[in-house]
Length: 324
Image 1 (cartoon, one colour):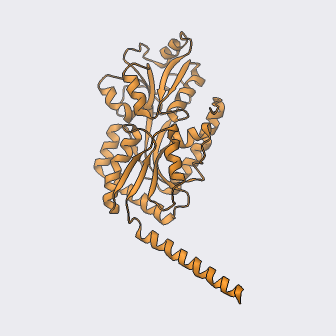
Image 2: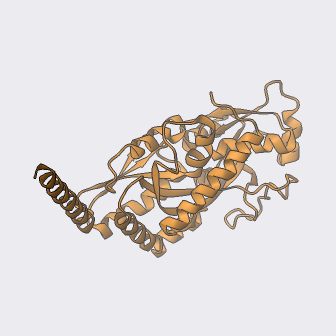
Image 3: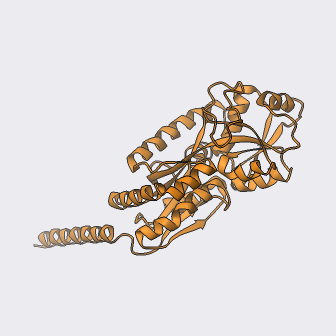
C-alpha cells in the first residue's frame, strides 16, 4: 500500500515538473534577458552583441540587457553563465579566444563544451598585427629582424592570456622565430589604448576594435591573419603573403546558454537572432566594421566549437603554453 502511494506521488511529481517545464518553454521569455559580456566595453565583441541586443529585445518583447563582467581572459563572465539557471534568461557573449583557446591553457573551473550550450554564431572576424606609427618595421620580416635586436622581445598587447589574440603572437614566434613579449589586457579595447598611446609598439586584435584607429592613422596594420585579404583593408597583406606558412586564423563571436537549457528555448533564441542578423542595417554595420555575419543553427555552431577546441588544443601543445 505504502509502495503504491509512493509510486503515485512520484508520477504526480514528474508530471507536474514536466508541465511546469513545458509552460516555461511556451511562455519564454516572460522577463528581461541578460547577456554577459566577459570583456571590457568598447571591444569588438561588445560592438557585435550591442548591435543585435535592442532588436532582439523588440522581437522577443522583453528587454535584452548587456552586463559587462571583464577579467581573467573572459572566464569570470563565462563561469557566471555556466553556473546560472538553465532557463534562457542568462546568456554569454563568448568568443573563440576565451572559450576554445584560453580554456586549453588556463583550465578554468568550467568546460566550454559540457557546461555551455551553443545557441548561434553572431559573426567571424580576421585579426590584425598592428603597430604604433613610430614603430619603423612595416613588414613581418622587418618585425622579426627588429625583434632579434631586443633583449626581452618586442612587447605586443592582447585581449588576455590564452586568447586568440595572444595565440596569434605565439604562432608568429613559432613559425618565424620572432622574439615577442606578450602583454595581456582585460580586453582588446584596453590593449588598443596602450598601443595608440605608445606604451606598447604592437597589438594583435580583431579588425572592428581597431578600424577607427587605422583610419585616423593612430595604428598601422602590418598583416591580417585570414587566408584572404580583407575587403575593408585591401592593401594589407595576409600573414601567408608575408611569408608565414599555413597561417589562417579567424576569430568568432557567439551566444551561449547554460548547459541543459531546453532545446525549444535555445532554438527560439537562435531563430530570432538569425532574423536580426538579416536586418540590412545590422549586416551593413557588421560588414563595414570588418565582421562577417552568421546566425547558424545550434548544432552547426556546437560542431564548430568542438572542432576548434580540439584544433587549438593541438596548437597550445605545439607552442608549449603552460598554465600560470
